[in-house]
Amino acid sequence: MSEPLLCVEKLDVHYGGIQAVRQIDFSLAPGEQATLIGANGAGKSSTVRAITGLQPFGGDIRYQGRSIKKRSPEALLRDGIVMVPEGRGIFHRLTVLENLQMGAWLRRDSVTVRAEIDAIFQRFPRLAERQNQLAGLLSGGEQQLLALNRALLSKPRLLILDEPSMGLAPVMVEQVFSVIAELREAQVTLLLIEQNARLALEVTDRAWVMDSGNLVHSGPSAELLTDDAIQHIYLGEAPV
Image 1 (cartoon, rainbow, N blue to C red):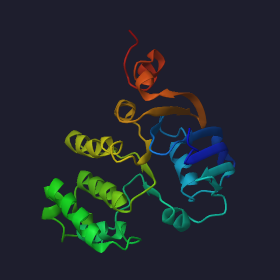
Image 2: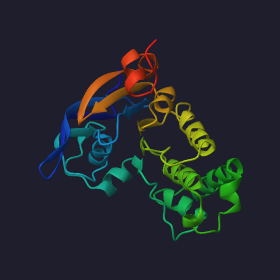
Image 3: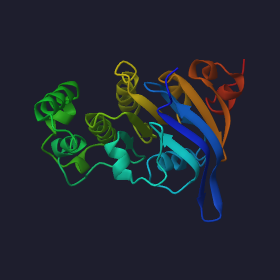
């Protein structure tokens, strides 16, 4: 078995006197797609903020075998940890094309980057039509597609998506998750944070359930989809 790409050990996150994450442990293998599910305020976003260097933490997080504790968010980005944050984080005053180009700012293969951007525009005609418009004028779903494709242009080794379906119309959720589903073929290691537990479990290999800062359940995503307790609490379905 290969060494984990990401290893989280005894992770604690505090905001003043409030403890948001409590002594959690999990790991991600290279090429694995996993999800953290749970209710609002369960500690999911605090966990990924720690992984990306945006939030001080206790315990340890190792990426590619090395502790990230004293590393900056920029250094982690250069090493391949890329996050699409809740709220998308696009550059509203840059055009759609400029946003995509920003995703590839660390790359030097400009010809390949241009071809990849052309492929994005071919797949998503709405982004192509608006490539020279300010990104802030896009709909919420179009902004999420832009943010996701911008992240993929950076060639992430670990991609973290924080609530990609939040606030989107069903047709846009379907488009966003069609891209996420393809990450398995591309062998992109994925950590998905998502309140829509069913969607998250359908596109991932493994899952952890968070509640009040604790990891309370874990297992293969396919098994959690059929677990009576998970169905009742997180999928809104009565157990059979």
